[in-house]
Image (tube, rainbow, N blue to C red):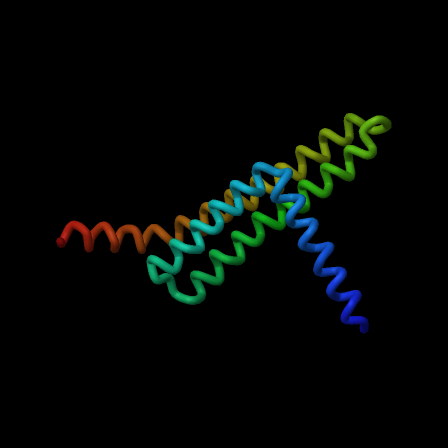
Length: 126
């Protein structure tokens, strides 16, 4: 195993993340919202398993967006020959991203609502 090769792979991975961040508005928005949700999970004092669950869903959404972006670039190579399939593939991938976002929102609501309710009750008692 070559340490130099490993470092080169990590460099390529960061280059890919950087490219996605620079070129994809949705990825930037998802990074911002994911960061805010993670900060909120610490501010509200979520239990460890809840923080891990929130983190995993943030990662899931970002991974789906990265896969969507990669597949969009790949299908654009095929566009001249198979254009009607390209649109279907892009729609399917966008649906996958949407599904991961909806799942993250639902899980987020299940986890965060009790904390917001308690915070609201605490504010009323002041």
